[in-house]
Structure formats: structure tokens, C-alpha cells
Image 1 (cartoon, rainbow, N blue to C red):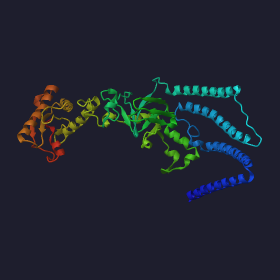
Image 2: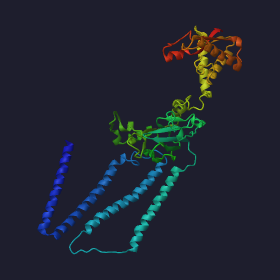
Image 3: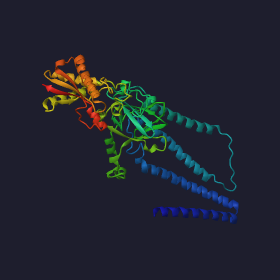
Image 4: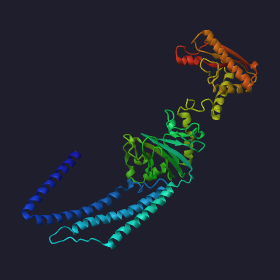
Length: 493
């Protein structure tokens, strides 16, 4: 109904304007063109003056009314340290331009009224006025010089790349999302190469660079308040823009040309929400979450301020500013992208044939617990699930040695334990072949323990059972995988 009323009002206004035009034409014919033109000039000049007053009043009134929704005013003061200088620069620029805006509009419509066309009035032709030209050249030049110098000071404050940042993170833009990378415990972000981008390695991280091994890929940006942050900005495909307006941050993300930005958050997300709660505008219900007020659901965000494609609207990433303690807790909960992306032990992994110290320690602790509990159990069998062999061979894989080392460590800690090393196969192939292969595999583990770990051979017995003792269904791949196993049986302790 409201739309219909508005539509009818627009139609009626158009009809009135058309009729006024026709009346004006008739008046011109009746009264004479000169009189009609003078009346028209007077009327248009008067309308211009009315428009001048209404426009300036409404411009100022709407600015004051909506100021609490605008950045830099009301609750939306800068959330970063450098943002204060940017806001100050903006306000100074606004002051000068607003003065020019007001004076220009007053002059424009006042001159249109004062110098409207009337009978007997002639225009004055002024070909040159040196003094006037000097004034309108010098004043803008001085003002512009002041604004540029002020802007350069703010720019140098923000972009001074002096290496004194507390944290460095990386934001990589692509259609249509952001990938946020944090350094791990070493505090350094690893190198990357676009030629190394694969399905498992979306950033093209160079895994041969040790700095990459603990780098974290996060689903949001979390930063500690009061710490200087250097954001390394890159793009994978087209031009994007890294924009965090509440922090007065805006920088292009250019493919092949890394850029950066510095910021120091000065207020946490929680405190910023509390500051919004003081304003009635933010006491309204959130339309997306009716159970909460607008101030309660406010979040800082990273957006793309470049029209980068049809999915541009989706390039939004949550930004949280927290205390230093909360940041450290969050960071410690994150896992390295090297281990969570599926790269570890894949063909892309340059370290796939070895374990890191932390991995070995974790496996060793797990095996120790399993071994010690087996000593107390009725069934004295421990499956060596990490001991594997090359296909149809008795050659141990390079990673198998680690679990054999775990076994040797437990045997040394339990000198009275005697074990049987048993190897099993599935039922595929000839029975005699499987029996021979399993016997060779059991002896391969036996020989490693004796030769490499100095375990007394009298404490070991190697037996191959072929496919005679299945624990899974040989009709399925998963079952056959279970049957191809190496295990130990404790026969004395």
C-alpha cells in the first residue's frame, strides 16, 4: 500500500509539472516572450535560493542525524592506533572542503538570483584580473600543500617498514575468499611459490623451508590488543583489496606483487561492543538474530573493497581483537597447516620418510602405554601397526624403524620379557608363497632388533604364519589390510 501511494504521488507530481509547462507556454503567447522570460528568470532564481537553503540545511541535518553510523564519529572512532591520525587528516580535509562546498553553493545560487536576466541589464565582460587569479590560485595551492604534507606524515607513520612489529601474518586473496596464515612457534612465515600450488597445498608453501612446517592457516583473524601487527598481503588470481574499515586499513592485494600494512589494535571486540551499547541506535534488535541487540552481535570484519568478480560479496572474514592472554591461548590451540592439510606423509612431503622429534615422542609414549597394559592383560599380543613392508617384499619401509625402536626401548626397560615376532599375510596368492613371505618379514624385524638395537636374540622368536590366522574378512580390502600385520606375543615376563 505504501509503495502504491508513493507511486501515485510521483505520477501526480509529473502531471502537475507537465501542466505548469503548458500554462507557461500559454502565458508566453498571451503576455509576450520578453515578459514571460523575465518572469521565468525571477522564478528560477527564487527556486534556486529555496533549493540552496533546503539543500544546505538537509545536508547538515542528515549528517548530524546519521553520524553515529559513520566511521570516525560517535561510537565508530578508530579501533587502531594509526587510525587516529587518519581520522584527524580526514577531519582537516573535510573542514576545508566543507567550507569550499558551502561558499561555492551560496555563491552559485546567489549569483543566479542576483544576476538573473532582466530588461535593460547588460553583462560585464572582464577579460583579465591578475589579482583575482593570484588569489584563487594561491589559496588552493597553500591548502593543498598543507593537506599533502599532513597526508605524507600519516602515511609514513602507518607504512614505516622498520621491522619492529610484534606479529606478522599473511592474507592471501583469491576468488572468493581469504586465506589467513600465522607463523608458528618460530615466529616466522615460511616462503611460498605459486608453482607449488596443488590440491593439498593451496598456498604453494615450500615444505623444504623449515619455517613452513609450523605455519598455521586460520579460519579467522585473531589479534592481541596493543600489539603491532604487520599484515603481508598477496593475491592468487585477480586484483583484490584488503579492507578493515574500523581499523582504517585498506590496501590492494595484487597478484605477483606482495604489499603490506601495519596496524596496532587499541580496543578489544568486547570493549568495542560495550561502547556501542551506549548509543540508542545499537539497542535495536538484530534482524538476523532477534534475540540479541545490534551491539551484542557486532563484529569487526575483513572485506574485499575491489569488484573482483560475481562472488565478491562472499569475501568476508571475521576479525577478533582479544587480550594478549586470550590470543596466546587461541594460538596454542591451532594446528600446523603442514599436518592438517594432508600434506604430511604424502608424495609432496619432503620428510615423508622420517619422523620429527615431537611425532616420535608421541608415538613412543603411546606404544609404552600399550606395551605396559599388555603385560597386565590376559591376551599378551601387541600389534605393530606402524611396521610396514614394501609391496610383496620383506623390505621394511623407512618409517617402520621408529616403532621397532619403540619396541626395543620397552624390551630394554623390561629385561625379563621374551617375545614372539609374528608376521601374517592375507589369503591372496599361493599358501606356500604367503608363508615364506611372512617368515621373511618376521625375520626382518628380528634382525633389526638384534643388529641395530642390540637386543639379545635369546629373547626373540620369529615366526611366519602366512594367512592361517586372519583377524579380518579376506573378501574385503579393509579386512585383508587387517590381516597383513606384524605383531608380538609376550611368551615370558
